[in-house]
Structures are given as structure tokens and as C-alpha cells.
Image (cartoon, rainbow over all chains, first blue to last red; front, side, top):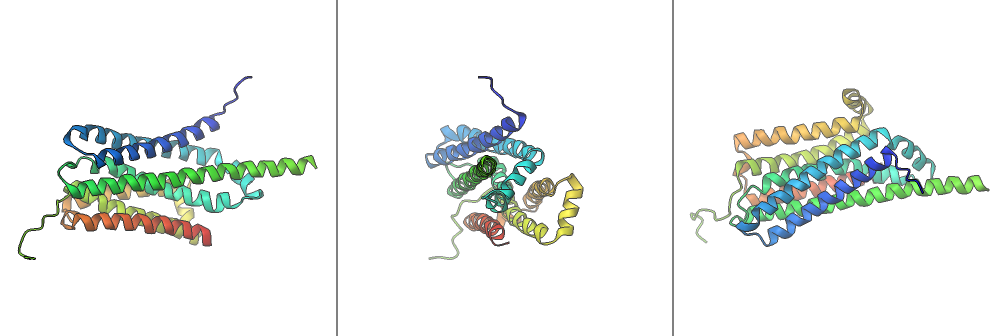
Length: 163
Length: 109
């Protein structure tokens, strides 16, 4: 069976994949900092950089998709049985993401501190990594609801058409 | 407890503390701007005219504000003088208020 993957599909999946990878990298930082010692500082800084780069890539992919491909899906959602998938979930997600991204850009700066000997810096990095994971996963969850909003709208349309 | 003893709380560098304070201000500004552009259509129109979409403009303004304030706070060392635990509390509080504020705004309006 031939694959039919459009640029819209590829960009949307890349957006979600970069977002999840960014959250996983933040969690990686969290766990490493719980067991911090001078020997794992390089790993912590590398994971923090991965989180920041992935969030930047998720922003670029998501932004391009939102501007170029989302308007058609938004129209479908608003005509379907789950208009709140746009009115609440997309509206909140598209602005909450900026918070996650700013925190992710701060993470590599904070991990330049001497974490093994500075308890305040450790607390800061743990807080940052935790906030990135929580807000990032909330954004991912909202994305799933938006996708389901499109699905129920299409099913609704199809069931109306088959009557 | 002897109040003349120096504080034993470890300090954050000027760069870290400056950018933490910048992040706290930026996340609150982000929520305020999201609400303001919805409540006041001319603002949304101006933001749209700058980059073609109000969301793009908001992202760029957030980024510029974070980087700009971060460098300013780092150079004037204003955030460095704040107790690190208080600074972390301010950041967590700002993210909580900003996130819940966005959810409430879009749930109610």
C-alpha cells in the first residue's frame, strides 16, 4: 500500500516529536540533578541544551503548521461537536507553549551553575526541569484533544452524509 | 540566632538570577498580552500587521523581552541581590499564575 504523507502530516508529527523529546530531556536533567556530582555535569548541560533546542524546533514546526495548515482544521472543529477543542484547548495551548519555551531556554543558563556545591542552583534547576515537563506534557495533551476534535468533526460529517 | 552572621544561602550568578527574573516577568507578560489582545481588537490588529499573525508577534515580543530583560538584569545585578529561594518562589508562582490565568481566561471568555 503506497504511503501518502503530506508536508502537513510530517511537520505536525515533527512538532509533537520535538515537544516530547524536549520534555524527556527536561526529565533527564531532573533525574541527573537529583544525583548530581562533578562527573555528570557535562551530561546535565548537554540534556539542558537538548531540551532548549527541541523546544525551539517544536516552536518553529508548530508555528509553521499553525499558520499554514491549522485554519482548515479549525473550521472543521468549530462546525463539529467539540468546538471547545479549539476555543479552550488550542487557545490555551498556543499561549502556554511560550511559557514552556522560555523556561526551556533558561535551563541551559541555569545548568552552568556549580550544581554539586550550590543547593540553591540545584533547587532552581529541579524546579525549572519539573515546570518544563509539567507544562510541556499539558501542551502535548491539549494537542491530542485538538486532534480528537478534528476526528469527531469528520466522523460527525461522515455520519450526516451517510444518512 | 545571631543576626550578624553572614547568610549561608548559596548565591546564583548574575546571569542566572537575571534571566530567572526576566523569565518570571516574561511569562506573566505573555498571559497579560494574550488576554489584552483578545479583549481589545485594535491591539490584535496591530500585532497582526507587524508579522502577519498576532501569535507570531506575541512569540517574538516574548523572546525579545526575555533576552532583553535578562541582559539588563544581569548587567545591573538587580536580581543577584534577591535571595535565591525567593527568586525560585517568584518563578514558580509566576508560572502557576500565568498558566492558570490562561486556562481561566479561555474557559470563561
